[in-house]
Image (cartoon, rainbow, N blue to C red; front, side, top):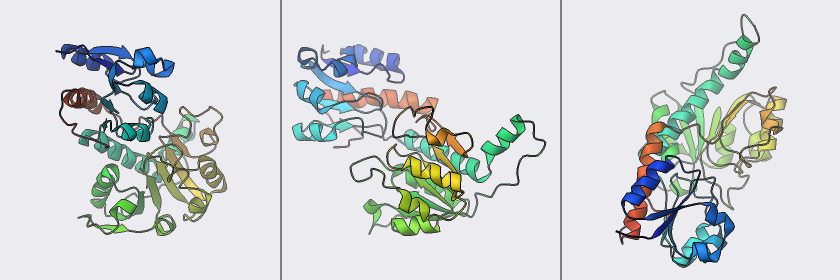
Amino acid sequence: MSDQTVVVAETMFERERVTSALEAEGFRVVTGSILASEKAADLAVVKAIIAPPNTVVTARAIDLATSLDVVTSPVIGVDHIDVGALAKRGIPLLHGAAPENYIGMAEAAIGLMVALTHDIRRKDQGLRAGAAWTRGPGFLMSGRTVGLLGGGRIGSAIASRLEAWGCRILVCDPALVGSESGHRWQLVDMPVLFAESDLVSVQIPLSSTTQELVGKQQIRSMQRGSWLVNIGRGGVVDEVAVAEALASGQLAGAAFDVWSSEPPPTDHPLLDDRLNVIATSHNVGHSQEAYRLLADLSVSQTVAVLRGGEGTYRVH
């Protein structure tokens, strides 16, 4: 048994489940508010931090947590955590890269693609407005050329499902260049991806090199009447440029689950009802199954490292 302190953010999904499991293992659980307060005395005793995306773990908090042994993100993304500060001290960073996580995101991404190509949002709006027949028909998703910016776990899961629909799949991912994917994908550079795709789906993390990676130039190079989906991270795509492309008809529709500022302000240009945008709040691929599994995984990985073992899914 142990009386070591573990920080569990108040916004952690299944928090009671996580807290109960840690306490049953003998750990003392405190709230994430001590991260924001950055009080040296409070942070000095912290051995582990479990932080979901809306809980920021700063370099200063990490420096003050002089007993820190591990930080865990219950989801795949870690851009809310100062990775460099952890690496500098050699502190392991774990994340929730379990299959249930990225499968849910892949399913949701394809759902967004189908909703866009079949113009579901405008058909729904038309019916609610009293129209007897709303707009014209949409387009088949089957057989389309789909560009995937990011061919990691989520991108791979999207591609494997779209293959069954006869889609031509283009993938841009520097990490895959020179590798054998084992799939019927075509690895291309960004200009080809945006120029030849009927629909582009973005699922890459935010970093200094991916900030507004998809900007005006890329969006303008897309075929007129194409679609864009962003399930990666806010800030990767220039949101104002997308709004302008939608208003001009360059893009027929877009779906955003992630935003440069979360939640986005109510006057955000992409939330203008005149634009064909499906907007969700960074939870489009979440599922009850994944929440429970990822909560349990956060506990088991964190406890394993605190007891001298290894985490299953390590960022570093």
